[in-house]
Image (cartoon, rainbow, N blue to C red):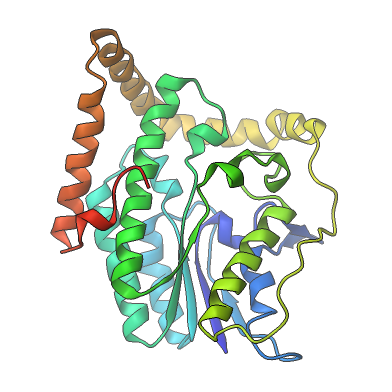
Length: 283
């Protein structure tokens, strides 16, 4: 069994530290894909900060060279955090990536993910634009997953996002328990298809869950750098989006923003001949 993981920091394993590096859900899943005593031949190509364009242009060719039996493609959150966000471009890239991997004989793993605005508890005028973007990304992921028969994991529901123990100190990446939960849920889905023959990943963490003090320390150290990097790229546009959000709210015309996002999503799906009813914005 050959398993290749594509994506960003979520799949790289950020939040699940082992020694001096990251492990993450994909590595945990790999141990249970092969038969007992013979874990999958695993390659993790995911890179922190990767966009859909990085996955399409750089990671996919390398993944295809590995001739994978299973390939995970979890990407899109970083796209929502960029001023260059383009749902049509993301749809084209994700569709092309899944088409190539499926044509090469790989079973593709996908997931819909929570939006970073809600995870960071941003004020509503800032959170709503990010939530709208992530809903559109998830809608595209739903549609592409249906087209290529992907093994799809719903990881954006309230029960998942509200459980503090599932998340690391930065509130953006899963904790060790969160990574173990993702690995277990994918293992269950793959077992139903006869593709997971080894032991299921354990849910018991090796490390204690992050505390409030850990969160405060992250915000005071690494979090400061993260915010600064995002501010130079996203903040000017996010403030513009927030201003538009407030103006529409004051006029009672907020539904126009939702309709505009719906139209952009429909156009993006139509451009790659995907079925729009499979990908409603609320899913």
